[in-house]
Length: 499
Image (cartoon, rainbow, N blue to C red):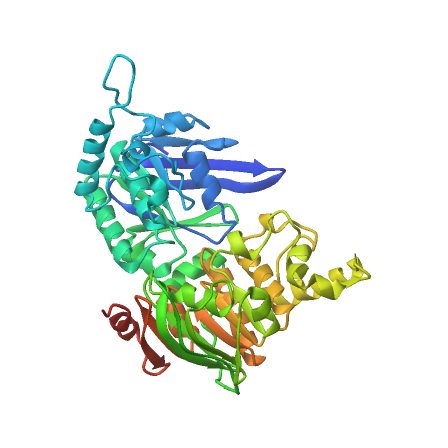
């Protein structure tokens, strides 16, 4: 196939094998100048492997990469950077002790004397000019460790722009951004497009893809499935390309069989985090909590679970006032919690699936101070089957599972304690659409079993599709409690943006 000058990047026949398993099998990708090209696929589809080869972190077994019609050297990070390929990683790759300016120009610093001292004033001036052009109000002399994740993300983008990147890969760039910050990012992307920069955009958020992408390429099981103009696809067609089948309704219908009140909070406050929040949740009910980043959603969840102490107010379990000083207290009162940060707080990566599932309930599998391995294995195996966790065996390390299956392991660990109420904080963050559908079915199964569920999510379709009632928080205050019938995206956003 001859080189097409319309394309800044052309990938042909790329193949990569790990231990006999093909992670990529004859994959192709063509990206035009000044376009946003979404790369879609479930976890394990090969997106990360393809991008790591493109930036030189991995070496392909076969195939070729052409940048502006000239072959890119295989497995050479420096070559990729010099030729104008940059990547904004989902996990921020910053040096926390260095300043914003020093991070932006890392490896390309200017010196101001014969002795090679860094010219920080010049770096700061260059960085300020760049940040001003992007509409970002961050002081260039601020140490990176003092920035929010969203601000660090913007600095990484500034770094890519400063390096005159021709192709910028953005991997889940909005996973830690507020709606306002997402709007700022999309403005930057549109400006980059006008300057002819190509963006390869990876995200599990369908609404983002159809907002920002011009073209969509889909990988499945390491193979190239197809490339389509975004305007020619809708969510159902895109999902079918990604998973190889129709998923049906993403949010399964469920009847409301609300039972007795399980948990209620009355005017609870935590100084500096939230104040005067009141709500209740019943058996067989999903209470959604919505709000912009910084609204206090996670802070409320942490306080109920005993990770943080409330300053005032009252928590009741089945009508009785309780004092929760620790997660152990919360678990004893029948509260389970699935953190938004599953890697940091949800599981131990180097332990097996079995060990992670039973970690919080080990006393139930010990006798005379000794672990009863058969009991532990039997319980874990049943939970793996019940939640349909895809794993080679109960002894496989959780580290090697997909994001969706890791999340199921965390939920399984919580379920073993037989909770009456489960708090799910961003239950589908960073997992693909097929795994999301399975988590949604699981939430409905838990609901049908009579468990009360509090679900925090930044994805409004998720909130609207699963919740029976929706609590909206804004800047640590309670803005509204909406019924399913009252709630729309516009209504939720109107309340979320109050004050």
